[in-house]
Amino acid sequence: MPTRYQPAQRTQNYRYAIRNIVSEAKKIEAQGRKVIYLNIGDPSLYGFQPPEALQEAIIQAIRNGHNGYSPSTGIAQAREAVAEEAARRGIRTSPEDVIFTYGASEAADLVFTALLEPGDEVLVPAPGYPLYTAIATKLGAVEVKYHQNPDQNWQPDADELRAKITPRTKLLVIINPNNPTGALYSRSTLEAMLNVARQHHLVVIADEVYHKLIFDGTHVPMGSLAGEDLPVITMESLSKNYLAPGWRLGWMMVTNSHLMPDLMAAIRKLADARLCAPIPPQHVIKTAMSLPPSYLDSTMQRLRAQRDITFEMLNRISGMRCNKPEGAFYAMAQMNLEHGELGTDEEFVLGLLREKGVLFVHGSGFGTNPKDGFFRIVFLPDTETLREVYTRVADFALQFRESKSALMMK
Image (cartoon, rainbow, N blue to C red):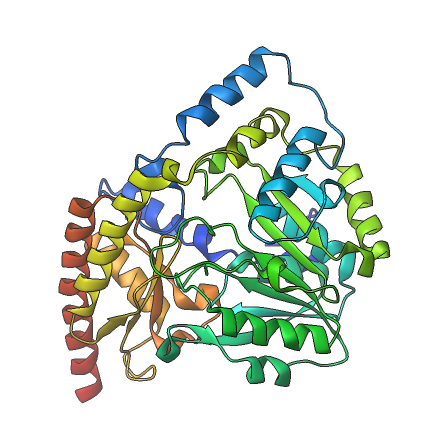
């Protein structure tokens, strides 16, 4: 029954599947059963910790009294360190064009809010990270999906992207390495996509929060391909590359800010209104930007083993396939649901949760067709846990297909 205090209409279609599905897992746990959570990419839940040097740096920052406010864009030494590290990777930016935020999520919110009017269109990948869908929905903007093709190792098609553009299109979001697929886009794919953005005068969000977590190939920063005529806003954070999601520190760095001075002023105005990003983590940035690549060696060794067992065991399951992730710590598997004849991805995921106590996120929560049977896996748990998980998945997949097929025969 409606009460006097009703929420705003814009919240009615606001969805975030990664967390929304947890309510079902809590019901299982309330029955005294254990649930293995593979729905959220939080490294700290699985024994990963930030580099020791960063832990020491944040403790020292607190002890040194860095507990107040900072300028809304961030402290100068941190912005300088980010710009210098970016330059080493070929990204043209400056300390003045670096803005620190509450994780990369707030960076996305600031850009969307500053740029998009109701009815404006934003191009987002499908499957893609649901944050972008949620922000667009909140603002009354229109999400237009461009597809990543699993048959092409999840590489998007620039011609399809071009065909989606209308006079209302303002923004192109590219996530590389990709969440949820684990794909790493090739240089040629990125160049083709950025050329489309250039031709149609779009702003590009380059979500590169996993750029250090690469198994195969080489990450190509989009800011390094921008030339002098394409505005690219690169988003990064401490959350994944530095294994510190709870510190809630991200940043955007802008390439070719001279092309959009009014938009930059609007972003800074919005940043002013929320005062500043967390201060103690800003004081670890100089240390973080100077860490040797070896700081991730043990992390990547463990993640690679977990990636490999995920790929191998899922592809042994009858009716299931999974591309080999090239970056991040996600895999996007597909259960053959016979084009929906055997149900939906959410039915499969919820059935797996209820029968086997394993929680994934259904692919439609990331923008795929529910009938296509995709689901995202977080392969952060150790290999022993993953072996148990995939054994349960194999058992349930057989049970699911047999029970659904039997119903179809009646």
